[in-house]
Image 1 (cartoon, protein in one colour):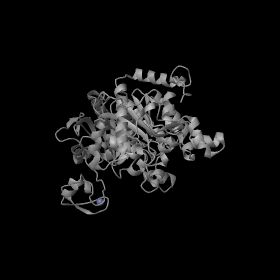
Image 2: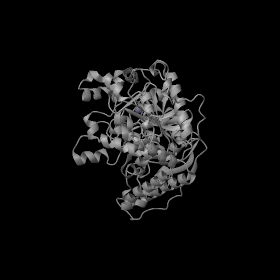
Image 3: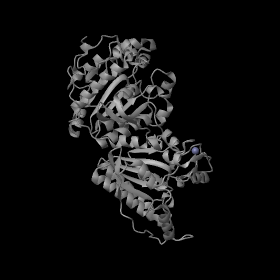
Image 4: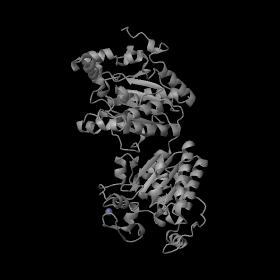
Length: 560
Ligand SMILES: [Zn+2]
């Protein structure tokens, strides 16, 4: 086995059978340089790879011998335990330490498949729970590296109880706002997969690592079905929305360092003078509403991803709704915007390339997109990070899959969730703000619109087709719908306007990004000192007053 012979001169890769020079294999963190196969690591090797040198501090008492059933198969359980201990140099199938990753303190619990198949027994449950307790006491993130074949049969039903015990510990970390990250390594099955491995805030998987509750052999034997290629591998799980990302071993430390470094923000630097957010429409270029619509949809206009690349340092995209798929029409992740840690979520139309636009579903999210957004917003609430949303969508997805997937309920759920988020939310309509698909990311404390953005209950074409019975009447519908930034401001639907370069954002992405950054920073400067009660009360008041005569909705917008 390649993984046990790192000191040998030559190692045969378990993936492609190539012979690799042993020292080269070790230098590559036991990843085959020929095929990329990730060889199994011992818990000791893994901790040494993950933690900053010299920072590891062992935690977790040596567990007592657990043989509650006095189990005997062809050998006694005690015999098997003794042998596993002698072979691995471990007392149990998990090794725990406090330490640092890229300078960020954390508690790590690392499983070792060599020890009775990484099976989850009473001692493993106790060690994982103890690691969670230390993480809670130190208010340090918990990193779990999993490898397991399932329950420890020799401990009978008591081993099953470890799933509930460790799930409880994860819930306590959720309530305390402590970040949890799991790293799925090959293989992770059964009770470990169905407890702490998948309860983490962020789930990373090594390439090719398999995870599931039931193993493929059991499924094939039970159902008689042939499973698809790559079933339950990390890449398969990513496509089905079940893990946040697939990260090669060499990239784990930087990704973990980024995530572990997320802290509630301090107030950003005070806004400059003049203000970055326009609060009156008279500074806008006077455009015909239809021209405005065309600019908002301009294919060269900066997309969410363009803004992220220019403005967000250390962006860590997180994928999937943990249910069905990773919706490509919504991008979500964590990072620092002008130095302020945020969760950033935005529709992504895909830019000028038609193939990419198609792949991104033209920015029309499916329910999985709204659910991914909701998942990230809950994470923001847990970690006390502000949420910034960038809205650019023609509207909700018109396909049958979106309806079968519960599109209406997914949008509704986001409206309710956002109404009560305990953290600042800033939404910017950077292009098209189309109907419920836009609002699902826009229940915010500050709603801004780019100078050439629009916000509308229906597309002008749709409105023209229904009310004018003539799609050619779209320009007239655009004028009547009052979707122009100046109208949105006077209706009180937006709080301010983000200026654009004179000819439009598509002419100068860098300048547009600078203007957006200044506006969002100005809004965050105002909101970050607000406590959760104030944020929720103000958000409630804002959405309560629409259509009443209590606020700006009553402004006289019949004036030119
Ligand atoms: Zn190989």
